[in-house]
Length: 237
Ligand SMILES: [Mg+2]
Image (cartoon, rainbow, N blue to C red):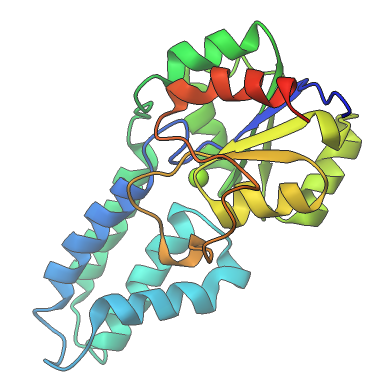
């Protein structure tokens, strides 16, 4: 058995360190209540929004700004142009509210990240709008604790591979921690690194991944279990 120490821990941000998806869900509910007044009875507003978001992902990328544009586009589509400009103004205001919203760390995050920093090199790896994510990292109070913050447009194998090279990280000593199996777990494992899944209670449909063999990576019910899990990683190989 080879000993595989852990030296670098990558931390996802949205819904791993702080609340994110709940904000999107709240806005989507308000959007539904607004648009339903102008839409035909047989329109599935939420399904149409998801289709528009999926269609726009390559152009807009992840984040609030792309989401807001997709809300506007969906509002126009499902009402066949009947939605008044004043309502579009409301939708744009919700997007701005989301961008200005304070960062709320999830339970245990501040304590656990400080604790991990004593033992490991820490990197925040997140995708989304560059400016918004930079702002959230600054507001989180965690910026000075981590060694690096990487804001990327996609979290896939090529991206992680590039980050490993750039930060001189040996994948076998790297562990990624996050709430998305598709973005935080599978691409990292494919590169020979390890991953820990910390699910959030709700996952955006476009982040949902098929269930995988849980023997490959541990799933935690709280980030508070992370220090123990990492030490267990170092004991087995
Ligand atoms: Mg996340």
